[in-house]
Image 1: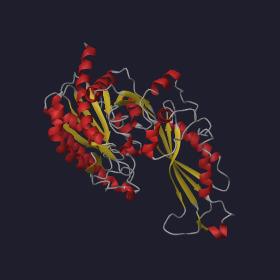
Image 2: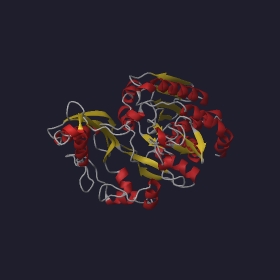
Image 3: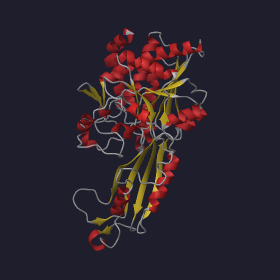
Image 4: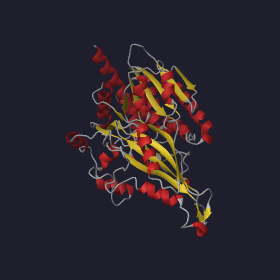
Length: 460
């Protein structure tokens, strides 16, 4: 399919200009002040889909942020692919660590730099451009629908209900997602598993107001000190999670399955060098790849309290806070895990503080079968464009809505990600290599042709 390569080469600058327009919109879903930006992003996606060749595209309201939907139905009897992506992005703090303004995208060192460059505007936009090529060249082999949401980074709290309300509109044979990564530019991979997520905020309160640390220190418990000790107790000496019942539903992989995982290319020394760390850390008895793919984790994503401004303020704070992220493996229920955490955290709180726990968001893990036609089509597409068979991998990340799709819509998802570990998603200086952006467009085009052909053959 040399035509797609030529099309990309001829339209490279146009693709980037259009993507940059989307990247300039600060669509941060977790900050209320950016609500208008969510609608700007939704409108941008609507216009992008129409210009790419969709028969119709519209913006749907939800109790939270909008959803942009578009479709092109060429023949109801043909297979239908539903493309899912998200228009919202993570906050940009700490802003002083960015080498260029996060919402002023630019090209440096063969990469697109800016918030959302990879997650998920860059990866999502690949699908619009692949679709555009297929439509303009009259080679679209199946029906295509797009659903671009605005709340993925806050747990997709309203998308499940949206799916229930629009089941017929969203009916499809497979859901195609590019919101994951690959091992390396020369080692393509298909994500076959995602971890679930339980995300909470804890508040520890001591005295009813901030106190003078000299007059009251040593006589009144300091909530920051107490919270630190409570958090430290959540892991034991083996780095296992110290919450009763936490591992009850964890499925342990067989030796054969772990040996298969170990075949994926991974060089520990390069991993440590890339992160500038002396040693890796994690649950004893498991490799780095296993710790991030098949084992659950608990991490503090933020901790604060007291005075953190310039200079000194001798204060014994009234309150201390932390945000806790627990990545879960399939078969762990995020609601049950949240309950176990709350019960345990309250039980270890000493009498001289009060604890409040708020469940912010979460979702189930997901395993994508490797024997379905969509996987076989993706496998073939990657093999053609990268000249190398892709490696099936389990991601340490979470896309909570993926399991909901299967529950509500009854549709499996195929996770064709093109991001790299070095893309710094969720961090300052997020980036996305131009190679991956263009190669993603090419691979997605190949996927459509193989998927339609394989579906037709299976129905013959």
